[in-house]
Length: 314
Image 1 (cartoon, helix red, strand yellow):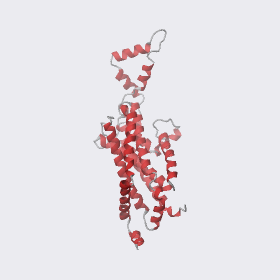
Image 2 (cartoon, helix red, strand yellow):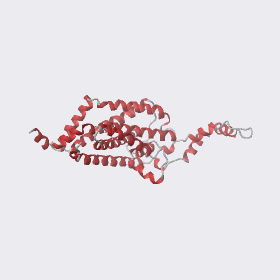
Image 3 (cartoon, helix red, strand yellow):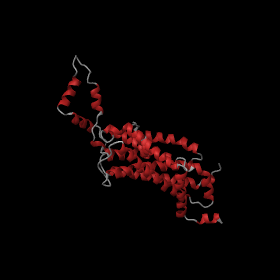
Image 4 (cartoon, one colour):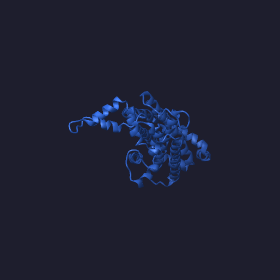
C-alpha cells in the first residue's frame, strides 16, 4: 500500500519531498561545508589578484578569470557526487514511482540555494578584503546586483554541468576523475589567456568560463581602464645604456616631470581594447542568456540520462 501511495504522488509533491531530504542532508550530513570552503577559496584569490581588479586592464582580466574559475570550482564541487553517490537509491525509487523530473527539480532548487549563498560569500569576502568591484550598473541600476547575478549564473551553470556528469557516472570515483578534466577544459577554452587556433575559438562558446569572464570584464568597464604592462616593461629598461647615455631613463623623467604618465597608460590601453568587453548592456545580457541556455541543456540531458537508469545493470 505504501508503494501505491508513492506512485500516486504528483511531480510537485515529490519535488518538495526530495527538497526536504536535501536540506536535511545540508544540516545533518555536513553538506554545508561547501560554504566555508567557498570563503577560503575566495579569500586566497582576493589576496593573490585582488589588488588590481577593476583598476588596470591586466588586473581586471586576471581577476575576472580567477573569479569565474572560483564560481566554476564551487559549482562543480556542489553536485559532482550528488546523484552518483545515491544511484542505487534513485534506481529503486524510480521503479517505485518516483518522477525523475521531480527528483532533478529538487536538486535544481537546492543547488540554486547553495549557489546564491556562495555568490554572496564571494562578494562579502571581496568587500572584507577591500577589493574594488564594479561601480557602474549596466542592467539593474545597482552595480552589486549585476555583479551578484553574474557570479550566481556562472556558479549555477557549472553546478548543473556537474549534476549532468553525476547523472552519467556510476560511482563517485568516476565523477571525481572526470571533474579535473572539466576544469581544464573550462580553463583552456575560456578565451581569456590562451591563444587558440581560429577554428577552435567556436568551442569557447560551450564553456561557462568564456561567458563568465566576458560579462565580468564588461561590467567592470574593462576598455576604460589603464594598461600598465608597457610602462612597467619600459621602467625595467631605464638603466640600459646606448653610447654612454640612458635615453629611456631620460624619457621617463620627462614623462613624469610633465605629468604625462597617466596619459601614456591610457594611450597604450587604447591599443589593447577588446570590443567583446565593451561597457554595453547587450554584452552581459548575451552572456547571461548563454549561461541560462547551457544550464537548461545540462538539466535536460541529466533528466534523459536518469530516465534510463533502470537499464543500469551494475
